[in-house]
Length: 79
Image 1 (cartoon, rainbow, N blue to C red):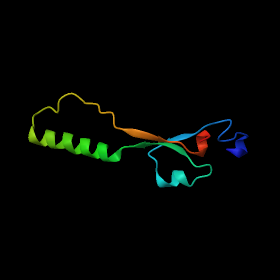
Image 2: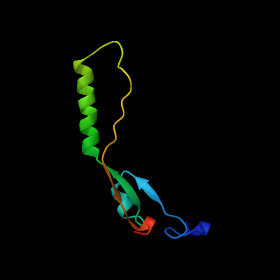
Image 3: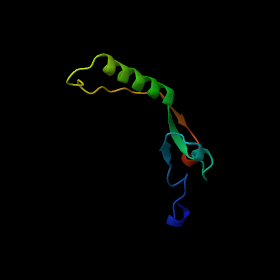
């Protein structure tokens, strides 16, 4: 953002999502939310198997699930 006259961090803090490997090597390194992908996968498989075991004409109401996550603080937020 230097070409826009803004500094990261400083004028702006930037946070991403998914903690991809490249976020560690960007300049500045990107603060990011790291979701628990294992938990997300286990929950998805469990819900799918439940649906397969109990088929019916309607899938039922939508369900929500809040997965665990961690905040990986790096340079883009002053960390």
